[in-house]
Image (cartoon, rainbow, N blue to C red; front, top):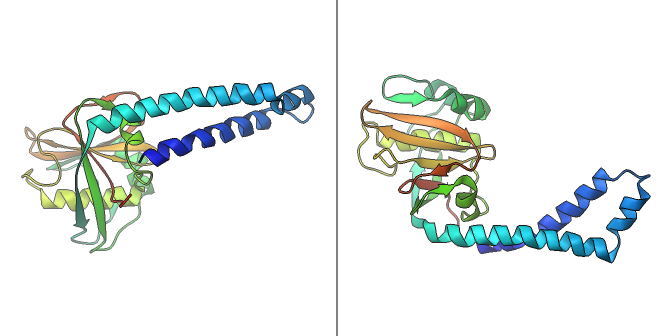
Length: 217
């Protein structure tokens, strides 16, 4: 996981330079010329190193508070149509944000589709970015994958019994490219809740767990 963070330094520097070059117009010879000077390179490197320091600090904090649990395999018990399944009804609440951000982009999956997943638990309150920086590079689920995985997991715990998903009102988290999906058991309503939130600096409570596609790295 640390390789991902280390590799970001060079990527940040390249991105900064390319962005500045895109902003500068061909006639802005002063800007373009400045970008090629040793002084400009020193400024860019210093800025990248500062960003690097933030990334490393965040990584070092997160790895101590995102604790690996185990790896599991889940499979769809039946053909799955996201738009048909993810409708609010008795035993299941589905947020409109989840439908618009995830279900709208998801495709049906056939019975037997399986996924090997890693689980980790939050030992303290963590933000989205603090969680993601400690996860494997390939931790992002597609909308189709997350819809299929969640339905397969819920199918194993329809009545809120003990299982892979936490059933104590703590969040079960899945990251997509555009949002984080949260699944919770609501004991009072005797049902599961599935929602989606934009990535931000709000913290997820300690005790929750996060899923990612299993990796040997």
